[in-house]
Length: 306
Image 1 (cartoon, rainbow, N blue to C red):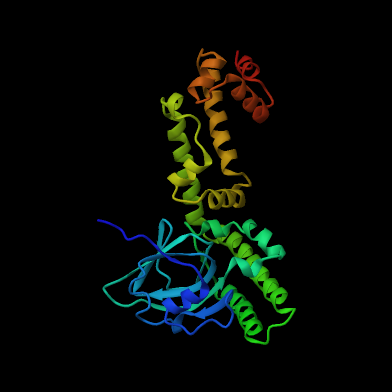
Image 2: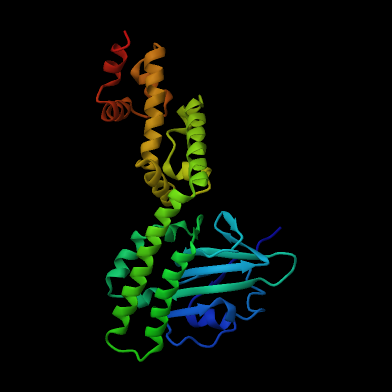
């Protein structure tokens, strides 16, 4: 079955037009009330991509939201982020029109021009999470963000002056910093989901390093592991650091060293042969990594068992 290519929305004005909304008061930033979006405005929008940032606090009934590789029922307050050129799609349930409440903040990159946020916005990793993981808000968290959005809306609705951009930018930064805090909280409070990821990671790495075909497949990359777990690399690494204090790469290396120790202590294979079997092209790279993690060379470790 052929899937239609995503519709590209180039400007905030175009977004307003497609959604049956009045022209935006500011061409580069807008706060939209989801309940005001025309019921038929999304009829031909199965999936779309935008040339600007969006931050949404949303509840949706009669539909499933596909956010990257995950589907969500947005019955509670959920926050999600999209950077330019990411793809978003929505599919109604039971042929009923989706009903939305909440808000969406649209920010064109040009609005950030010549500000510190233009350089720093990439440090907020959850814009990468937009391909995988939403932020589930408590009532208190939702109230905090709603208040910031009201401040932004009031500022650009008032007379624009030399201070307007700086004030709005500072409010956006405050919102992003709160979101950073709330994401870290989510890693802790959604323990079952988070620890399921840990269990799956352990099983995945064990299976990978038990594979006798490591010679051809090579060492697993962070990108491969994240893809197998249906998570973005940044989200997985941030989650693991919050739960264990270790990055994804660190977990890969730990499993690798565990397997190397097993081979060094239970087989007569040479260090070169072990390195090759573990997917290393050069035994020197294996020995260097092993010593950095254990403070012993592979041979020194082996001698301790003799």
